[in-house]
Image 1 (cartoon, rainbow, N blue to C red):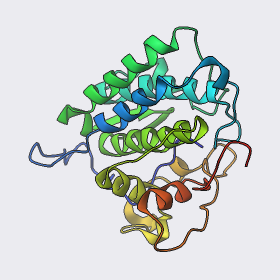
Image 2: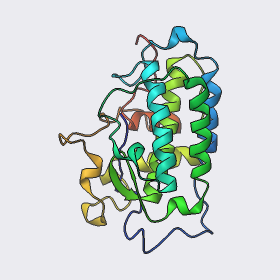
Image 3: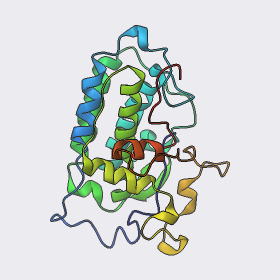
Image 4: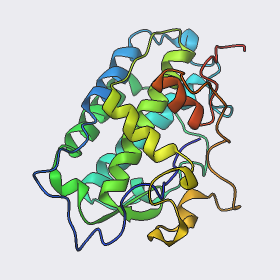
Length: 232
């Protein structure tokens, strides 16, 4: 449901080969702004409603978004404390009463943190896993895009994402054997893709037509049905 690390991303020798300032880095701001725009229509009556994440209600999805924004903000800053040490699957998220003030602020903070080129270099930690900054940034973007879709679909709101964001998510979520550099020899740690019980943290991809919209293909790769609706 949450973190999944892909062998498709460049993740070897991250400390010796930092991302150049000349490289155009992914921008998380549009993804965070979309989520913030959705929050105004999430009234209290919707908090106990279902989401595409089987274990989460809307309340828990919002709690997860609040926690992941803080975790990836701190991962970008290399502030490796309690927020980056705990797996998101260790317990159901708790939504605090002040979430309407806290979550928009956290979203602004995580977007700002990843605008720094330094965030994309060296090693960092998220979900208790050590990983290169460039991979952590791609995972952060994927979390925001996919869970933004979850929130929109759960609350009956439209959702769209930019092609560059979706291409990044597609590269992260694609089965390793289908992506470039997907062999186990490319230097990635298989344990980063698995939960402690050896099972994937995502469900299996959902089949969709090859000509399906890119957003639908990304959502299907995350193990969700693109046609999911509350009660379906």
